[in-house]
Structures are given as structure tokens and as C-alpha cells.
Length: 196
Ligand code: HEC
Image (cartoon, rainbow, N blue to C red; front, side):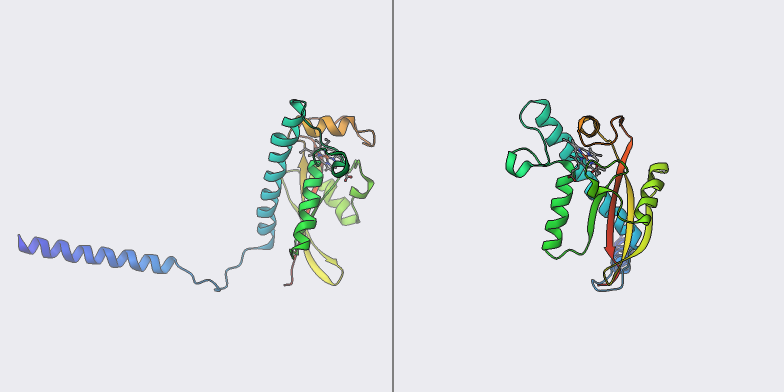
């Protein structure tokens, strides 16, 4: 009987040690070189931006409009309307830059309501056309901006809800008026600095 308890005791100590070792093996110190490929980082950032904007468009813009409470418009600061979904993105990007973030992002379109949102370079135009054809794929390249190098990722921007197409199709400055649900309306560009 006593021997059985000793054996169980030894087994328990052994198990506890195994647990300790496996825990130690899975641990890494902060500061150890852990790298994540830049394109994966871009994908993470993309999913966060996309989720925030979709939530804002459906649960704030569309909901307020449906209940006749408030619309979204370009001149939201002076007219006491809601910011447009694209402005949520622009304002957040600018605020991020002011607080020291080096990651920049913006929306572009092949049929832009605002001409400033047309692709700025041949590479951006190419990326926009590519995600139009293959919306599930990111279009990535290395670009130089000023004296820095950036990883530029371009993602398709789709009509995720009725409000997207309702507003664009009705907007007087929109060059295209036949957007349908799920159409690619433009692209989100994310630029991540490659040097610290
Ligand atoms: C209430 C109107 C409204 C809604 C809702 C809206 N947009 Fe827009 N969107 C605009 C306006 C106006 C602009 C141009 C604003 C600017 O940059 O001055 C714009 C800009 C854009 C651009 C950049 C190219 C361009 O047309 O200038 C894209 C891409 C875009 N919107 C996609 C979407 C998507 C996708 C949704 C839904 C998630 C959406 N929009 C919802 C009005 C709207």
C-alpha cells in the first residue's frame, strides 16, 4: 500500500516537471527576434480597418438614415451630419499620423466621386485593376515615398451593404451609377514603412 503511494507520488512529481518543461519550452522572452512577414502585418491591419468601417457604415450611417435621424455627407463638420465612411478612414489615418504612426492608408476608386481619390501612380492603377479582377487577392509591392521605402498593399473595397451603393449611385459627382451589392467599388491602400 505504502509502495503504491510512493509510486503515485513519483509519477505526480514527474508529471509536474513535464508540465513545467513544456511550459518553459513554449515561452519566449520579449525582445527575442520574433518576426512576422510584412504582408501578413498588412493583412491584419486590413481586417481591423475593414471591420471598423463596415460596422460604422451598417450600424451608424445606415441605421440613422433608415430611422430618419441623420444622414452622412461630405461637409459633416459644418452641417452637423455624420462623417461619410470614407471620412472615418481619412480622419483616423490623419489622427494616427499626428500621434506618430508611420502606417498610412486611404481609399482609391476607378470611378471616384472625388477626383483626388483616383489612383496616384501607374502601380496603384495596376493594383486597382488587379483587385477588380481578383478581389480575394492582395496586390503587394515595394514603393518609395520621399526617402523611405514602404510595403504597399492594395485590397479590393466591396459594396458590403445597401448604403454603399445607394449613396454612390445617387451622388451627382459619381461617374458610375450602377453599382450592385458586392461589387468592387475601389481599393484600400495600406503602406507600411520598411525601415524604423
Ligand atoms: C452617404 C454617402 C456614402 C456612403 C454611405 C458611402 N460612400 Fe463611399 N464615398 C462617398 C463620397 C461622397 C466619397 C468621396 C468623398 C471625398 O473623398 O471627398 C466616397 C468615396 C469612396 C471611395 C473612394 C473613391 C471615390 O469614389 O471617391 C470608395 C472606394 C468608396 N467611397 C466606397 C464605399 C463603400 C464600399 C461604402 C460602403 C461600405 C461607401 N463608399 C459608403 C459617399 C458615400
